[in-house]
Image (cartoon, rainbow, N blue to C red; front, side, top):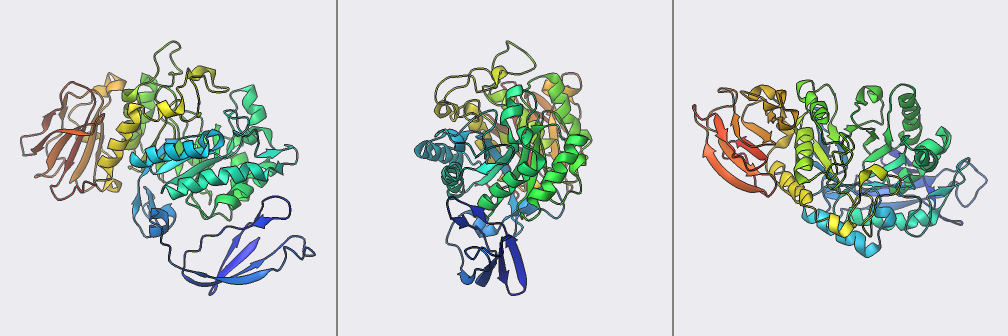
Length: 499
């Protein structure tokens, strides 16, 4: 462990082994000036590691990365969304590349990141170890061996370093899963660190990954695809306390589909935001499940759907059905985004998440269906739809929006869940966003919004503004057309900042 000191402030950071006799420490100071450091080793007779000390000067960064410009991510004071340390709101628009860092080449990884940067994504979700979706990395290495007493493989992480560094270089926040824990297959039980390792060995592994990447822009996904209910929740509460106690980064978990686990982790010092997944479903029951939260928000922290349905993936509830298309993805993403205080949403493309080099069914995911190669899947139209989603919300003060079902005169989703119209509004009633998955007439209750707003109708598939009109006292029924899903945006003429 290395202790860094500035004036009277001290920060303790775990060092990590990087092969042979090499130990490293990574630290991102937040104050400019002269810092001192001193090492502490559990073996005090180790003269190469214990009680080494020195000083360094921290200067202003020349990087344009928002994380370095505005400071690390934190939770807003009202517990509704993420923001940078200087208070600048951060809109979570994540792309899912679980296997990308494990299986990509250096050049291909850059191609992918450039595409996602151009489309306005802000977060890259990935996996930091072997798991049921990737037994090894592209060079046949695993993060560790000997599950009874793990032996870290530095070469695996040295390769992963380059991928995480490039996430940083392109201006993204990395959201790595530290210990996947899915229990729904025998292969997963044997391959996932969260199911094949004991609690103490999971802690060793997670602390190692956190020490290696904790100085970079990151949000930890401690574990993925478990239930986190009852005894399983207690297991991960204990692991989180032991493994993330010294990490200043935000953290969450990625639960199994259609589960709320925030109450299980409420009050845990390491648990910062409520992650959930609506999952690989495209049915009425999932529509009801997502939108039920709009009537009963509940969570006392930012809430983000980390896995809405993936574009190109088969719907798990309907064997033999067609793969889910861009409309299915937009519907799930907008519903999830607008079902609570707006904080962000994640997207996934089948073939990107599993990083396929040729058309194939992803490893140990037989129900997912044939995935396209990653270079085809990055061009799926749904990723363009996410670019338009990000552009719209980053043009308005989205952090002011709350679910407001009473904004609507009528709700077609009451009888047809897949037609559910999602509505949000600011407390001041001067900003509102409505998503209508089937377009048509959207009727707003008179008097709910203030007078003098502009109404904009946007095609969320293309980002095209179809019309704009001034809202008067009689103009509360808006014809969005019947050509597909539509987005209605209400704001003062001075409110929107197109970027």
